[in-house]
Image (tube, rainbow, N blue to C red; front, side):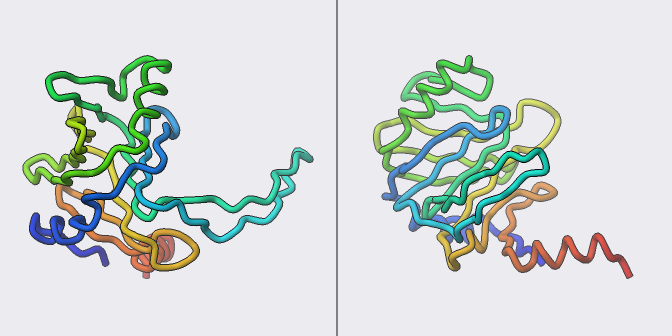
Length: 182
């Protein structure tokens, strides 16, 4: 079962992220923003996959940061006095702006509880802000340092307007319970 977090819990869990540098920044599906922090560490290797189409995907060992942030939609990168780019920017501006985050050092991580918005501040004066521009909640997750070789074991995300700490084990049990109600 996910554990609800207070602002104090959130601050304690994310304090070690301060001082980490962005090691990889990239755009995911749609306008998703993904940031990895600290050393990139290998996950469990994926074997070669033969698709039904006959195409073969080579074996690979994916890398992930010690910490990771995923913002599904509605985000912006702020400069000291203006918005530099955001999830609605053009592809070229977005690609250049996201790439420019690599190497930025985290100076603060905050969570607004009124509307659950994640904010990452950097020592160079820039900040990444997750928000919702429509009648919904911000969609983001902050993945905590790896505890096992097959990926992040816990993450913070928002559910029903509350910050929650979720673990892989709890997420799997929840999925199984939804598929097999008793």
